[in-house]
Image (cartoon, rainbow, N blue to C red; front, side):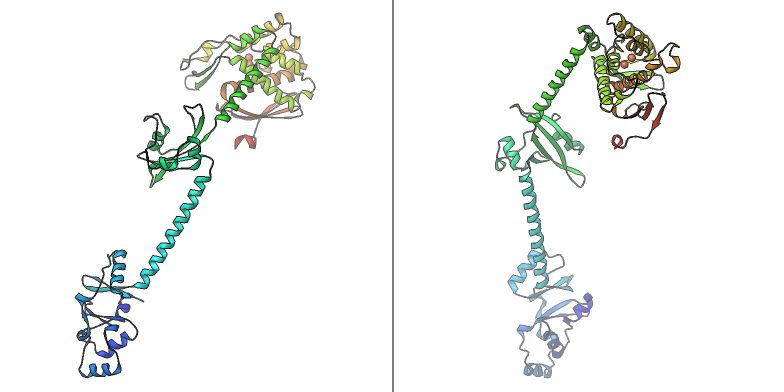
Amino acid sequence: MSRASLLKSESVSPTAGIHVVAGILAKREVTYVVSSDNILLGAIYKDSLDLTPDFIIEADKRSIKAKDLMTLKEGVPCISPETHLDSAISVFLETELKELPVLENDRLVGILPLRSVLKGIAEALDTVRHQQEHEKRSSTILQSINEGLIMIDKDLIIREYNRAAEELLGAKASERIGSKAVVKTRGGSPVFEVMKTGKPRFGVMSPLADGRIFSVNYVPMLDNGNVVGVIQTFQDITGQEEMRSQLLSSRDELDRAFALTLPNSRVEHKLKNTPEYRDVYDPDNGQITITEVIADGGYKHVVNALKVLADLNNKGIMSLLGISKDVLVQSIIFHDLGKSQPQFEIGQIVDPLDEFEESCAHAERSADIAAHFYQREDDVIWLIKYHHHPESQLPADFPNHLRPMLRLLKLVDGLSASLTRRNGKITLDVDGTKVYVYERNPHPDFDKSRVVDLFTGETREIPDYPDTTG
Ligand SMILES: [Fe+2]
Ligand SMILES: [Fe+2]
C-alpha cells in the first residue's frame, strides 16, 4: 500500500462529519485530522469518545465536525523521520499509544506503529545474539589453539591474549589485555614493519632471554585496507631447533666419515681449500659478478657428485654393462684435484674467460696427480683426463669401452655443479641405458630436462617431470 493511500485511510479533513470519523475509528484507535495539504491539525482518539449510536445521532444532528472532536496538534505526541528509535520508544512508554504520527515540516508523512518498533527490536536482539554466539565461538577457538596469540592495536595496546600465550609467556591475560605491549625498539621488531607495510611475516625466529626459541608469525589486521593492528601467533620451537642442530652435527659426522674414505689428508685439504663461486652472468659483456664464495666448494662438489651417483646406483645404473662403481667413485674423488681456482671476493666483477683456467688443463693435471701420486687404475685416469672434452675431440686411442662411463661422469659432474653452485633441484630416473634428468635451475641455460643414452651418447630435451614443476 502506498503512503498516500495509507494516510488517506487514517486521516480525515477538519470538516469530516461524525459518520466518517466513526467509520475510521471502528477500525483504528486514532484518526488524524489534516488540512488539504496534509498539515496535521489534531487527532481524534477512539478511547476519548463515547461512540454509542445515541452519541452519533446527537453529534450528527448538531453537525459536529472532526475539528470539533480533535485533540489539538499541540497535544498530539508525534515524531519526525529523524527521531532516534530510543526517543520514539520513550514516547510510546509515556503515552501508552499504539502508534505515533510522523511529521515533516508539520505535514503528516507517515505512521510508526508500536508493532514495527517491537519487530525491529526483536530483529536487533537476534543479531546481537548471533554476534555474541559468533564471538563466543571465536573466543573458544582462540583459547583452544596450541599457538600463543596476541593481538595488538596500532597504539600497541594488547586486545587479545589467549590461553596458550599465557602458558608460553607465564603471564595472565587479565593483566595483559588493555596494557601496552612490550615491543623491541622501533625498527627492530617485525611488528612495526608489518604495521608499515601491511604485509605478513611468517616464521620469524625469536630467541628469548631464557634460552627458548619461538617461531612467530606477524599478520596485519586490516580495516578498509588500513592496518589497524597486528596479530602475533607463536610457538616454542626450542625442541625442533635442538633436533635440527643435532641433525646438522650428524651431517658433520657423515662428512667426517666420508673424509676417512679419501686417500689421505692432503686430498681432503686440497678439496676443502678449493673455492667455488656463485655468480650472476651478464650476457651483454660476458662478465660475471661474484655473489657468494663457497670456501670448501671443491669438497662440496665431490660430496654432491657422490650423492648423485648414489641416487643413480639406487635406481640400478650399476647393473649396466660397462659401468663400474669403483671406477666412477675414484674418478669423482680425483677429477678436479688439479684445479687451480682464482681468489675472488663477493661483489667482484670479472671476465670468466680471462680469470678461469681452461677446464681441459685441470682435467689433465688431475689425471696426472691420480696416476703418479695415487696410482689409480688406467680407466680412472682416462676418465679424469677427458672429463671436459667434447666427444668429437677425444683422441683416437680413447678406449671405446669407457665412453658410457665418461658420459655418466660428465653428467654427474654437471649435476653436482648445479647442486653446489646454483641450488638446482634434480630428479633422476634410469631406464635401461637411458638416464632421465629433470632439472630446475635458476640459470636459464640449465633449467631444462633431458635424457642421455649412455651407450649412444644421444642427448635430447624432454618435457618437465610433473613433480618438479608444481
Ligand atoms: Fe672438472
Ligand atoms: Fe667437476
